[in-house]
Structures are given as C-alpha cells and as structure tokens.
Amino acid sequence: RKHGLAKYKELIPATRSGKRIEVAANLGSLAEIKLAKEAGAMGVGLFRTELLFMQGKQLPDENEQFETYKELLTAFSPLPVIIRTLDIGGDKPVAGIEFPKEENPFLGWRGVRMCLDRLDVFKPQLRALLRAAAFGNLKIMVPMISDVEEVRKVKVLLNICREELRSEQIAVGDFELGIMIETPAAVLQADAMAEEVSFFSIGTNDLTQYVMAVDRANAQISGLYRTSHPAVLKAVELTCEAAQKAGIWVGICGESAADQQLTEAFVNFGVSELSMSPASILAMKKKITELN
Ligand code: PEP
Ligand code: MG
Image (tube, rainbow, N blue to C red; front, side, top):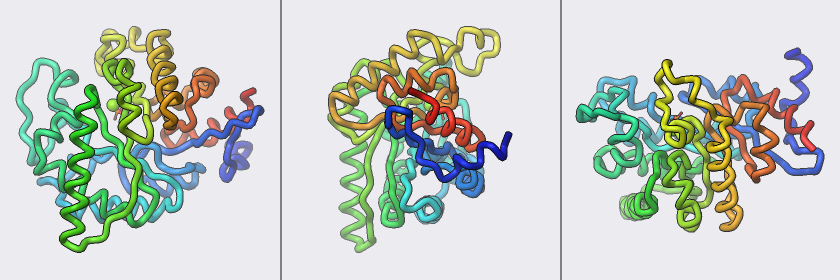
C-alpha cells in the first residue's frame, strides 16, 4: 500500500479539472522536518511554536528563536513555510509567563490576546521571524484572531520591529502575513479581515469547538464535536467566499484538512492549501488527483 503511494511524493497534485492544491505539513518541532520532506510535503502549512516555549526552564530568547526559524526556512526553501506566532493559554504552562486562573481558558487569555498584552514575549518572536525571513519563503500567521483591531495591532508591531532591526543594521526579509480563522467572530468579519492580510488558514479544530460550543478536550461531549457538521462547513464556506472576493488565498490547517470525506467540499469552496500531519500527505495527494 505504502509503495503504491510513493509515486505521489514529488507530484504537485491537481484535480481532474486542473485545480492545483498544495498539500503541506503541520509541524511542532525541527525533528519532524525530515519526516515531512519524505512524505512529500509541499511546504509547511503550520509550524506550531508552542513547543519551543514549553520545553525550557525559561522563555526562548530572540536569537534562539531566530536559529530555529532559520533552520526550518532553510530546510524547505524555496517552498513556503507558515510559522504561527505563539498560541498558548492557561491550559498549558510556560515558564516565564504567568497565567491567571481562569474559569474558561479556551475563552480566555490565549494566543494573540496574550501576545498583545505581553510585548516582552511577542516582540522577540516577531523580530526573530523578520530576521529568519531572509532565509526562505516565510509566511507569518497569527492565531485566535477575533477582532480586526488585533490584526492591525500586529501589523503595527511588525513595522516597529522592522524599523528597530533596520536601525540596528540587522538584515530582515520579506514575508506574507496571514491569520487563522478559528473563531466565529473572525468568520463573521472575514470580509474586513481579508482587507488586512495576504491569506487565511482555517483552524477547524478550534473553529468546531467555538461554532458548536463544544469543548474540544471534553470526552463526555466528543460526540457533538463534529468537524463535518453543516454549521462548521458553512463557516468554512463563508470564509472562502470572503477570501475569494478580496483575492486572497485560503488554506485549512485543522485536523479535518486530512479528512478525505471533506476534501471535495473544501476544494469546491475554493480552498487551495491543505496542511496536515506528514503521515496523511501522500494519501491526500492521491485523493486530490481523483477529484473531478
Ligand atoms: C486549529 O485550531 O484548528 C489549529 C490548527 O490550531 P491548534 O490545534 O493548534 O489550536
Ligand atoms: Mg487553534
């Protein structure tokens, strides 16, 4: 079976009607680069930076982050690498960030919300990303967006960081900025969001949780957690429509990107990139070539 899929490794898959789809990898560490390349990944659709922050006794500094991002970008260059800014909340401990005790961590101080309050954490990450951008095809992605103002604030910060680096005569590279669409608020404001960024990546894990009002980690109600629910698919469709109208591209990086029962719907909505765990990539490439 495995042997039969090997021929898809180098393939750039397209549907029978000729629509090309990028199949990229979700990664959480540099250790997975080799696996992703062997699996035929056409880039990285989601690099989760959380692990980098959770493994040490203190926060990773700018240089440590720069070295990590640089290695990742270099390994995949010229293929695109989407690095997500820190998406951490009260449900995960990080040495160096004190989280308040919250009744509802998933509705709390996480992702971009925390980052915008803790510039001592956020700015070193943005600076490291801007520096690493010189070494490959970087796309920066911001998680947990629920208001257009958050996107604007991140853009202002990126400009400030770029100017700082320039005045310090440190090289910076070009990048694209995108956001995750994973809250209902972001879906409902997707038109306005699309004016601010170059791409959307739909986080169907959280989007399902927030659209369905079902805790993604609560086993008791896991039967209600359905990424194929019509309400969730409608949210994906609305996001794609807004993106198309604004002329930006959309990908999916939640687990349902690898769900072959949803692939046809996603492609019909206009999704042009699917990012998933490396183990699912070859089979997805095959699936795409079989779509009409
Ligand atoms: C998502 O929410 O779908 C996603 C890809 O991000 P995470 O699973 O890291 O929250
Ligand atoms: Mg998420």
